[in-house]
Amino acid sequence: MKETHDCDLKTCFLCSQSLDGWLPLIASNRKNLHFKKGEVIFEEGKAVEGIYFLFDGIVKVHKAWGKEKELILHFAKKGDMIGYRGLGNKKTYPVTATALEPVTVCFIDLVFFESTLQVNHQLTYHLLKFYTNELQEAENRMRNLAHMDVKGRIAESLLVLKKRFGQGKDGYIKITVSRQDMASFAGTTYETLFRTMNELVNDKLIRITGKQIAILKEAALEALSANKELD
Image (cartoon, one colour):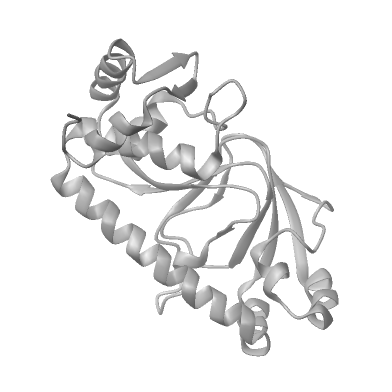
């Protein structure tokens, strides 16, 4: 990790929702940090130091799941906020954030962030809406992990990645995820993911080139994620 100076005071959730007159204070209280691929930004169980806003790069947010396993909750991208899950009474991070590629973040310490919320009512309002959406998504995800079969979970995971990151002109989803991370995101094992992905390829629902994945038949994946079959 090293300090950089790349933030434009416009891109992230914090700056876009704060008063114009508050931006100079953000500029003087921020720390722009750079993390290498594979570097941990913050760790599950550690005391909350502040909130992070992604200026560039992709981060996986994950937590321990059984012995030597992890469950990836979501992938964060440019403009997203991470570290907010530690804002409860315990003030410890309940998850870990790891850079999947070189990442630049704007770090705001906890005291200044709480002061920002008290002054910037629009930010507080949008943060409340953000938390509500996050809660709904988390509830849906936990329900799916409990009740959806593994092929449905993998299909849904692919659809989530496409919706969040989009696809290029070549049809590939614009995020490169390792098979192990994909398994952790779908809540399954590497071996099961490998076998199921091959089935999806053989059924011509997806195309795989290296670590790149293209969705060929979105409706069919949606049917799998809904545990129903197409007519």
